[in-house]
Image 1 (cartoon, rainbow, N blue to C red):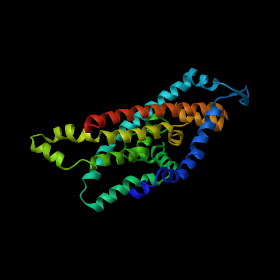
Image 2 (cartoon, one colour; image 1 turned 45 degrees about the vertical axis):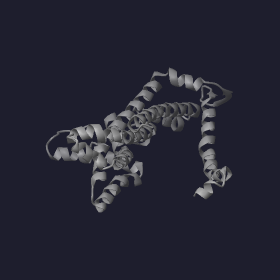
Image 3 (cartoon, helix red, strand yellow; image 1 turned 60 degrees about the vertical axis):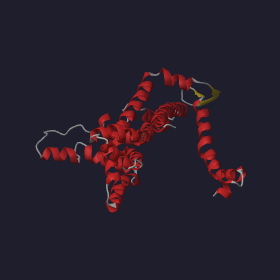
Image 4 (cartoon, helix red, strand yellow; image 1 turned 120 degrees about the horizontal axis):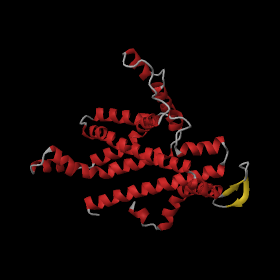
Amino acid sequence: MSRLAAAGTPFAWLLLTPGMLFLAAFLVVPGILLVMLSLRDVDGMLMMLPSYGFSQYIKVFTSAGYLDALLTTLWVAGLTAILCVLLAWPAAWLLVNTRSRTWRTVLYVILISPLLTSVVIRTFAWIVLLAQNGLINDVLRKLGLIDSPLALLWNMKAVIVAYVQVMLPFAVLPLATSLGEIPASLPRASHSLGAGARHTFMHVILPLTIPGMMSGAIIVFALAAGSYVTPLLIGGRLQPLLPINIYQQALQIANLPLAAALSLTLLVVTAAVAAAMSAVQKNWERRVYGH
């Protein structure tokens, strides 16, 4: 490998060329076209005009409905990220501390298997569970706990529950990686110096897993902020979420410039939040590891 690296930069650029061309063709160019589309003006019939301007962005940032949808989307994505990180801790701890290689493999298969299933199938499974004639209401009625079906579907709580189930593996894997990188000697050294289990966890284990928690939170936040299939099927089209508004503008109303402006707004805001979280993560790593 060192001989190949010493061969010079042109060889390295030659290896990067296919990937860079692919990204340019399917990421950079569509992004530029999306920006240009978002600047197009439309007439009263939503037909695109040859002129360009910022009318679509003005509409986005002066409309209380779109701003409320943006804030609600960020709030739901942030809450989903927090819940996923909290629920990921026991699962990641079990994965790392399971001594049997067979059982560890089984646990990893159980964790990753939902990712191999289409998100549409998983979402419809939640509909089967939460519907008025679904499994949960049916069991509660048979147990005599309720007289009439509960409204478990078509609300934001159901959306958050489905989000957490869909996104949880993305929080478990980075956290398990951070836990696996902690040397076994560190907890033993803490105990030998008189620290209890709680003190060891709070001052030794937890600080070293902050990077994994932040990585998982960033991934979950970004995925939840841009998802529209799950909230559309679980919560309904009236939920104040920006991805649903984008879907409606693009495919139902056919106002493509406004849909592009909403998409870019969500992309920029999500990227800014993710960048801020990443900066916090890097700052924490510098404080803990000293570099």
